[in-house]
Length: 235
Image (cartoon, rainbow, N blue to C red; front, side, top):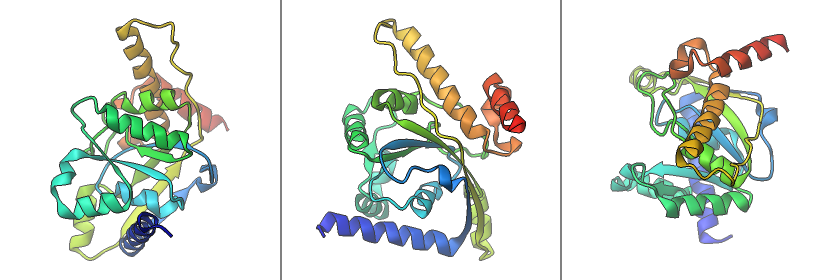
């Protein structure tokens, strides 16, 4: 086993052990997760422990983790992200090198886990998302898996840890779906932006459909969410 592979194995299992110690995690819809091949998992982002959930229920060695550049200044996070073979990304500028590396790993069969919101929600409710995830999804042409988590909010984690109580975490996996590729005949930048925004709304509404109403946030009144909820109630 190569050194990097061993480091990944060690770090991943330490993360999984930590999550098992601090949380009771219930995963609903685990049968919907592909066991092989590349895909993109999109999720809400409510706390720092969200990333740990990925390694709790995804038993794969090709998870692609994207991490904000702000954590590079901390020794622990540098060690952890190196061990997990993560990719640092500049959130405030077009980080083309990071995007190329993500696409390369996706096309090699990796699994990208990304939060379209781009940053943690302080309230736990969904925020307006950015188009980065939908751009990657259309470029890669991959299956998309909506995932919704509750119970990892930073405020909840602090309160539970203060009283030495384990977290009660629920992860819900939605039905996989795909997005149409961007029409190459569309040259207008504004039109492309509108298409990507519509794709982003589709992602976020599918995440919202897996969440309790109090988490719907920005997408609470979105007509697409209503369609998905109605369809779910009919089945």
